[in-house]
Image (tube, rainbow, N blue to C red; front, side, top):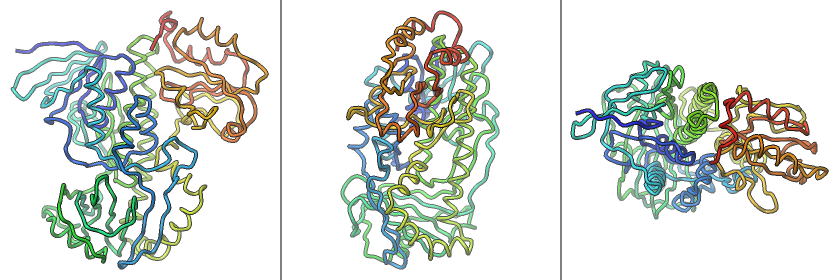
Length: 528
């Protein structure tokens, strides 16, 4: 017999994206039901890399340090041709002073899921495993989902919003009838986690490039534990024939041309790469996030991280609308900001993947004759490493063209829509002041005003809605922002800059907040 329960948000899928969304909703005190057709969190490593921006998000809920402790930091890389090292790549201090996590962390998907899931359980929440969605309806007042568990029992869940975090084959996307346009890369790829005897430098990955194939050997936590990633050109035109692991191992040995012995295969899979995205990431009261919204090549390890950031972007907006502090129109910015990001991501990962695996003659020439020298030289220079880091780590993602971004004063290097830059204040991480799930007003001050009247005015106008910090214009702050002019910086709850202004009053901030937020008195009583 059907039973009905009511909640605020339904989360379909308990992979990294769905679990991250649940973790964020806990921060805002939003009730939810999360379910997945799987029996539990995955025991497969799958996605490999956690980037700096994801670690910054994890750090707000105390999960960054456990992730770093449970992972492997990549320090170096070696390019190889014909068994010989053709280039040494230096990724130590990769991100310089751009993030409190200036590195690439190998922290596999199963570890991410366990970390997030245990956080949910610690906060009294549980995933409904072995549960599928049989039906979905929505109207102006809410969403209704029909769930069926492993025993065949059905239950109706009513909520204000539903988010499909249910992967590339997303039942949610199909039920919403959203088109998933794109293409399939014509080549066959493999991934394997192995225990392997291989003489290698510590914390170093190895990449072997040949005329029509490659293999990437990545260190994972644990002695002699490696990830192998590569392609099998022999199978590109054989659509239905499956590649065996023995063939993969022979291919790896053929490419590496160095002594190696694989003693155990923990996991192995072959696949075709798809590049697709939904036409839009929302329909009515339903949203898509992660692989349900976009899939792309594995270049740069962007997939899992992008899904987690989808969840981070959406969570605060849904929470503020549900609690009556923001207008419903705020939710339109999720599709606006994250769809634009997905378009850029698909383009850049496709280009990067073509360089690594494309079979055109000029790409082969580039890999053999230009890439080794170029990569070796580039990674010797801090400024070059930091530029690459901003792209790969996703800290460079911005929403400058978003309807939520207001910038007054063009002299600054940092713009509205940018992630709040990382720096130290009196030896402490600036992000330590920005942990609360609310808006943050920062004043970059030259010391000529104490702004006590602002603090009183903000408290009277918004209560606990916006916190307030005065940051001295230290030389390194001036260098980062590109100006010694005092200014206001209003951060959204996801620590992206919503507004920058050099006006030394709160008038323009009030205009911004009035456009964004609900007009009733609830804004004065927010306490999060």
